[in-house]
Every structure is written in C-alpha cells, then in structure tokens.
Length: 96
Image 1 (cartoon, rainbow, N blue to C red):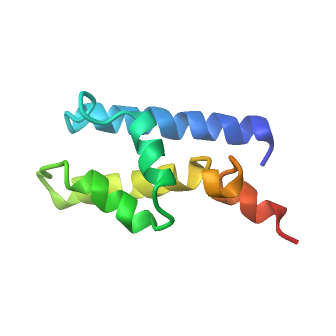
Image 2 (image 1 turned 60 degrees about the vertical axis):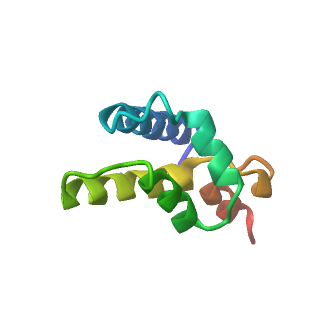
C-alpha cells in the first residue's frame, strides 16, 4: 500500500474514531491525543481497549463488537514511540 493510500486509510480510521467518541458521548473526556497517549503507554492492545471500555455504558453487544473492531483498527494504524513513530504495519514491512 502506498504512503498516500495508507495516509488516507489512517485519516478514515481517525474520523471513525472521532465519530465513535461523539456517539458514546466521550468527546468531552477522551480525544484522539489521549488515545495516542494511552497507546504509547502500553504494548498490549487489550489494555488499551479496556481503558476505553471502562468509560462506556454499552447498550448492546453490537456496540461492543463495533467499537472493539474500531479500536483494534485504530491501535494498528497509530504510530508508536516504541517503533520510532511507525505504525505496527509499517514496522512489520521493515523487517527482513
């Protein structure tokens, strides 16, 4: 995937995450910068997911599933300090 396509995909994921924060009425409490901070504080995606989930009162199992999928996509698209600013996908592509 080209950098332009990858950048566009990341923008889409960021917009979906922002929309989800508004939907769950978390946009006053959690923003994309805070999510990035939480991502950089752990190497475990489930710890990140649980940190977000503890802030939400879900109304259905479908909401849980959709947000879980989005959070994992967001986790994989987010640049990491541990990878020198690369996303996990970009980091994997660098390995021989």
